[in-house]
Length: 156
Figure 1 (cartoon, rainbow, N blue to C red):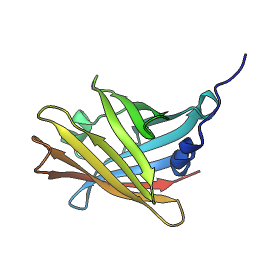
Figure 2: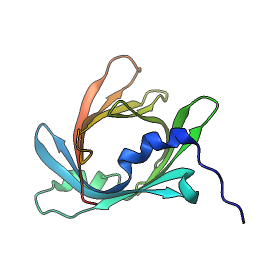
Figure 3: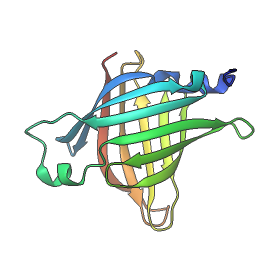
């Protein structure tokens, strides 16, 4: 059986590949820790993400009770448009579609939905072993408010 050929633009996602520890914090206070793995599927045609909690006694119960964990997502390329789409699902039963990109050392994730827009921008460290960023939300897509910070540290 022949496998799908991979498009060269998919290499923009390569900095994400590996296992990461992810800390979510609000104003410097740790609220959740997760282990996240990004791995190629179908011979490199798609990038799969799986994330699950790393229990920590210091995490607030109100955050843990509503945490979007576990997370499964698949990122694929529309080669005609040169854009990436992420199909996302989590442990709360939430399913979403995000525009995603990695360009010039910045990971961006965006969603425009009626009354609930979201965006993430994360800077990939020069050594490729950290990503630091923040999630923001908006009711109208114009006025944005801080949600939480995220720091990824590469394990492998």
